[in-house]
Length: 80
Image (cartoon, rainbow, N blue to C red; front, side):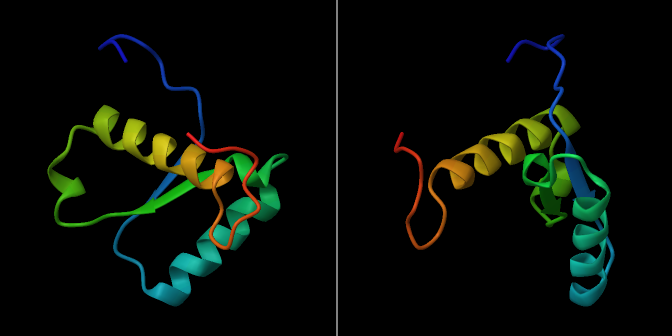
């Protein structure tokens, strides 16, 4: 991705919330979205707090797309 390329996908970064609050936030965002499966969620980590936002968004979207194609337990539409 070039430095000036726009990231259009939806990503929710959650920082500083408990596990229960995080789950509630994710459920609320999904219930409000027209395409809930299109939302990528991530929580902050000591590592990703040091990243540039663009790099974090790119990584989260790539992981989200991989998981959509290869869900845990099988049933993925295709392999990379």
